[in-house]
Length: 76
Image 1 (cartoon, rainbow, N blue to C red):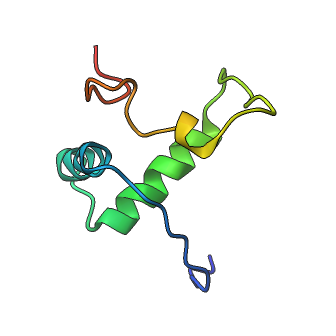
Image 2 (cartoon, rainbow, N blue to C red):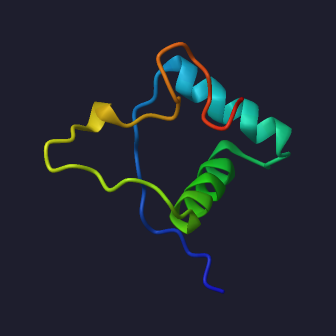
């Protein structure tokens, strides 16, 4: 498997979004934040049953957290 990583992807996160990713990273024992983000992206790309974004969607319509109260997706 070629693990060359020639492309950099930058995203802006709120402090709550960063904390949600870091909390997941530590609970999943991921070696780095980058590895955690790659794993979450892989899982998201494999997921089924999600809605397709509407044409009028904006970037800030999408976030790490399920709502503004700071509850991470997947928490019940």
